[in-house]
Length: 276
Ligand SMILES: [Zn+2]
Image (tube, rainbow, N blue to C red; front, side):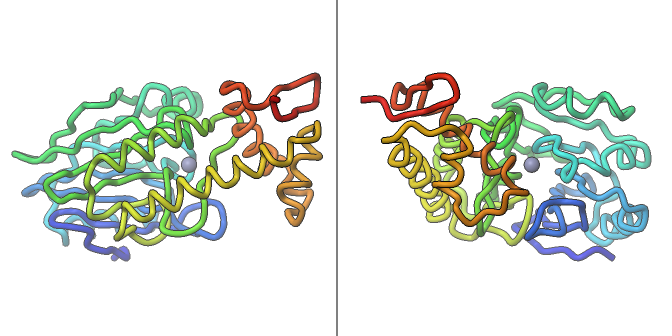
């Protein structure tokens, strides 16, 4: 039987072992049930044992038929097991069209499109509302069950730590707009893609937003002198090992892209500096 946590009426978090980034060793799948029908969100495990246990867990939770599999996005730690689920349950898989190219080349999965504002029915009388929440990845989706004041937010945020928003897929402006979109949903709980549930969504959204803006302010302050990307990284992240340079520079690149778009930073050749 799989570990599980009840999130709200008819909603469960299933933390399944996955190949993801530290500090996590699992990705949360979510099961939403109405009557005997269930919809599964994300599947980061392709371990045959986990997939076998899923069947008995679904039965235990009263689900006799999976009607859809939804993907918040198509990073491998969220969809490694999707082909196996599609094969063994025959369910349609849905994701935002911007996420399809990453998935289709090496799998046989056929994916159907989901757009902002769509509703995915779960049995009779219940539906998951689809919200396009880019920033971490371009076609990232969140799913809300407003009757339960529950929003499944994928990798947009977690209860602790900060989410990867970096080059080439990340976009800080989109990310902040997505946080604002979630704030308007009046949720009582967020179900993140990794780690525990977020029980105070408004407060957490505020912290996450403040963290991004603080990082942005550090970048602007550092660029009173012209710096190239590597020098900027050593200023902002002096303690991060060289081995992680690609990641830290990737996250600075998306801040720089936003600041350049806003006319607050200018680029000359390899160097960036604050606009006067
Ligand atoms: Zn991700």
